[in-house]
Image (cartoon, rainbow, N blue to C red; front, side, top):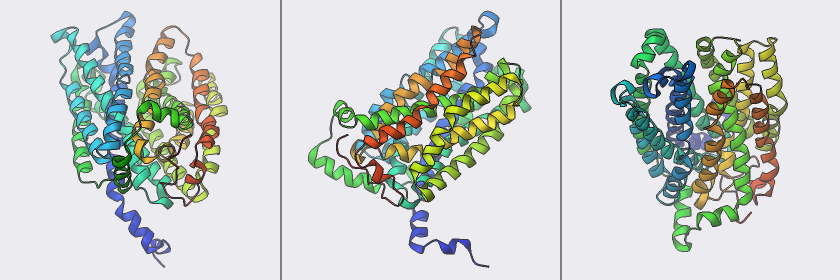
Length: 450
């Protein structure tokens, strides 16, 4: 019997092995970003009264908590621009380390916010401030990760690296539900509502500090170093000029992000609340099952990335980006009417989201040239997430409070058509078709105008 690794050329195995630190630096940040952001969402029903007080029928406090969840996204475009500029000038590693340090500090800050009973309305003010700081840092995190992975992944395994790095987002969500399940098991609902929720944010802060240590040990992107020397000679374009020059790339990022962020926050964060509203399953049981769903999502993402490396991005994306459009509404109708159980719907919706997310880091990274990659990708990405992803739980709760939950399947379906349309707009980006061809180098996307 021979070692299966022997079929991989020695040079290629050495290349993959030499990139593990870069992949770890990208992935660990994605884990922490997702965990920090989603631990707030899953714990919101438990700390809402503590920080935001009680509203009519107990809804007001939850709405306040979700409103702050949405407010945190407001700072993302600003962070994308400022940290993205640092990423495009000072380096990917510098931006990744700085952003993660801020994220960790803000997470620990939320854990330390006194309750409303102690300081009144200042509890909500401090929570808003901490979420704005986190949003600022998160705005620069995702595009810097996408740029770093695009520039450091081995050409023949770049979509596998993309799926692993974006898989960190799923791992972070998995951990957030896991921590919630652990806290429910150990201290119960009453314990969470009486201050036990703070432990979730303590874990978030400690994970962030560990991520900073990993990133400080990672090397800088060689492609970035080459681009910086050219930029030093010719200068860098302004952001408005970047958007004008790369308008088709910006539109493609908007469309892919629209489908990805709405699909993610509905299928992997809000779905337990949605199912509980229709009395299909209780909220706690649904939240506990999401750990299994996220495991399936992670495997699907890894398989999607491997398939894109094997068969090419475009054939895989045409299937993965197109399937959610007809299936999301059908699955949700089955859930509401009782002929599909929650567990089946949750798994299938998660897999549909995974087929979009699996290749997204490199897919969007290849749309922009190296010298403007982080800021060009980042601002469009962050603005779209702020407008559509961050507002989704708040929108859903608002609709539920007005007995309009039936609108949600239509809204989600329209948004998930975005990635399918993005395959058309991406063809208008010069050099993109060549860049995504199997075996092309990651620098294959032309820096010319759109």
